[in-house]
Image: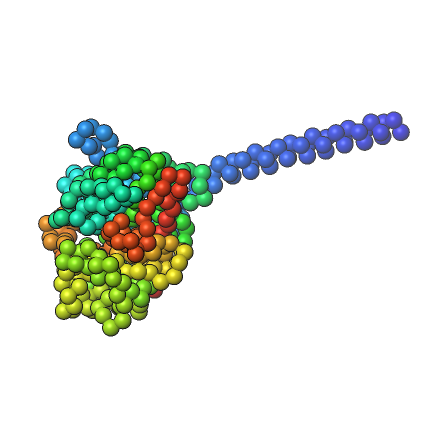
Length: 391
């Protein structure tokens, strides 16, 4: 009996040791499997893009999602230099205008892909009055101020921090605009997030705070050509805009203060139509803009659909959503064939279009327009998303 008990105990011990060894081996195997599992496709790459005249280095950060979509951003101007999106056949192509090198971005291009501030769009006579004080701005668009002045946010160095612990690849961009920079009052601290999600959405989130009352109107100035072929015009591509009204402008493209119905005008994009359908219309507003270069007053409030764009040839379809009150639709009217294109050749007339979500132009001088004033203690908050699919 003692021998049996001893043998029984020995057998139990052996089984226990084997079980522990087996568990240990399984745990080790699980660890090995974890180590060899492929990493998710979404990631952030960083490379040198160029060197500034002061020898500071400009980097390009590329966000990638699990579907092969890629967005590249440089810390000069917060510029989106490329946006690679699949067509209906799965061919991935770049669909935004830009340049292959930093040098071309330094030659005052037409705001390709840039973050725009402190005030996007135009301010009439390059001045405004806030709380009884008149502020004079740079006249960089005839007698008007355009996109923040001579050195707006499109021409400054943004600190970029990749957010690697986020569910989606994210870039955090920050910039401090000093008090009276380009004539605007207050130290303005700006934070922008570029977020690429797995449903092929590029989110652009803006936040800003100030230590003095100021005016703020931030936007993103990417030029799209959904065909992926920059030698083609955008006139056959189709656009819809969720707006019953738009802002007519003077000869110098400053809003008159009126909100005019789109009904019965070339500005009616409530149903999708080709960009070229009415772009040569004899409407005086078309002649003032040299095409479409106007601000539409969006229907509704909060985060909602602002516009869509569709290229019948490639099948690429883009939906723009925003919580901003308006959107500027610009059809590349000032492109004149003098700027080098990424795929070779030059950017010809109307080879790109912009859909810039924003507040109204010249709001600081138009009391009836939604206010763009930001006060100390307040947070400027704005969001726009660009979602890509095919049909």
